Length: 85
Image (tube, rainbow, N blue to C red):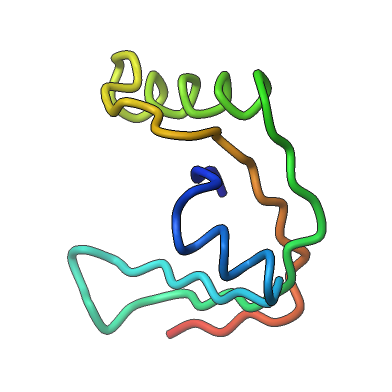
């Protein structure tokens, strides 16, 4: 997961590293995968900034268009449990 250090998501993870990520099928809102786990590593600096550029090019074919307001950070999640329908 890639975010910025000033955002509530990151501040909450610093306080409590347990997370839930929910992936939904846009064609069928009743089809989903829920992943629960713990953030076990953070990567900041140029590697995180390059990661968001790479993701943007992969999914949009263009450079990341949002202005970076603070510092990018990559969050690595150790998966404890998954559930899906």
